[in-house]
Amino acid sequence: MEPTELMGWVEQACAELGIPALDLETVTLTLDMTGVIAHEVARPAAPLTALIVGLAAASDPHGKDIGASIRAVESLALRGKNNV
Image 1 (cartoon, helix red, strand yellow):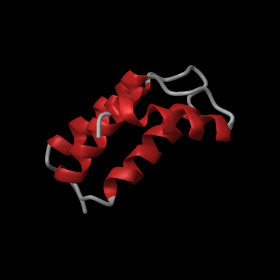
Image 2: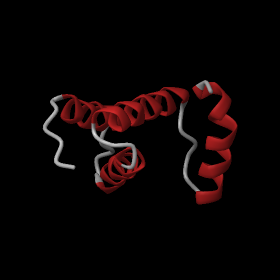
Image 3: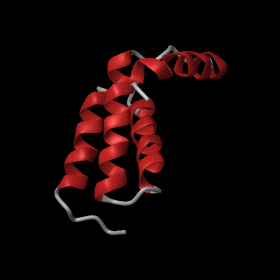
Image 4: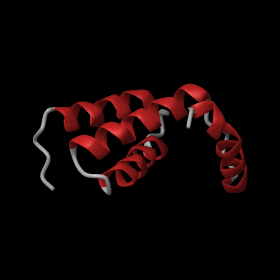
C-alpha cells in the first residue's frame, strides 16, 4: 500500500484526536522508519519506535523536527547495536 492511500485514514485519526493532519512527507518517513526498525531491530519495535518518536516531538516546546527524530532512530537501528 502506498502512503498516499493512507492519507484518508491519517486525516480521520488526526481529526479524532484533535491534532493537525500529518503531511504526506511525514507519513512516508514514518512508514519507511517502521520498515527499517522492523527489519533491523524486531517487528514489535516498529510501532513502539513510532510512539517514541511521536512523544519526543510532542514533548519538545520548540517543535522538534520529527524528520530529524526519525532519521536518528533509523541511524541507531542501522548501526546494529540493538539490545533486544
